[in-house]
Image 1: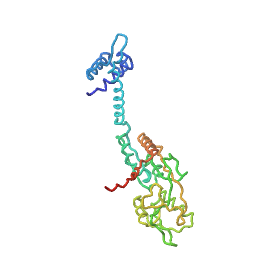
Image 2: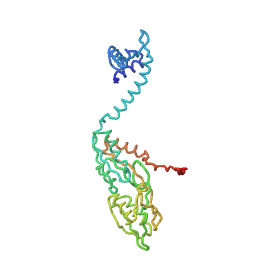
Image 3: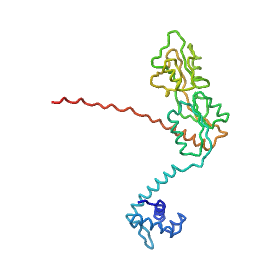
Image 4: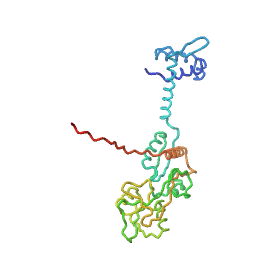
Length: 302
């Protein structure tokens, strides 16, 4: 049985208004059209749905049952139509983001936005060392998510984090030697945070590795080449936090902040920004480790 949604809407309108004439006015149809819809619906279900008298119109028992299902069917159809309805918003969104902010969330974020706004073209730049503030001010980006220290940037704080000193699990500097440090190239904020902290402490250090890639920097650390500054969430298996060791000074907390190019922001960028804020407020899903099930040893056969 394939029930026509148009007939179901007419049926609901007749019930809610209490008559064919009032239903016709609500749906902007003629009264004969309403009568035709109800007759077709009754033919499709093979049951009478209404008791008609000169004064009242009531539902039969089958009509009451159909009414309950009709509402659910139309609600589901409306939800599907809303989900796949093309948005009138178009244009270009130029977005910059710190590599450590979105992680695995960036792909589903872009997919969700592309499905909702298929007429919008995305231009995305991802990197740890780009000066997104300067790029925003120059008008090259519409919005960006940057990592900064408290009080440095004005914008919408999406998430807090903590800068930490990180090294390989087996790392141990040579006695009396300067500490080897691995950094992103300037003007990366983690580099600035680390160097500023080192300059305030009596620690001898030298730069042993520089890479614009997060994977490159992690590889250097995991190989034991040196110590670096990461956000706490970027610590990988095989690394350890060495805050307070080897004379290293404490590091500040950091903010992931959404900033805007207010002079040229368009509707598409505003929608993308709202989606970022929504996703940032949702905790990342983690896969729980399977529980160990204890089993009793089998009894030896008699």
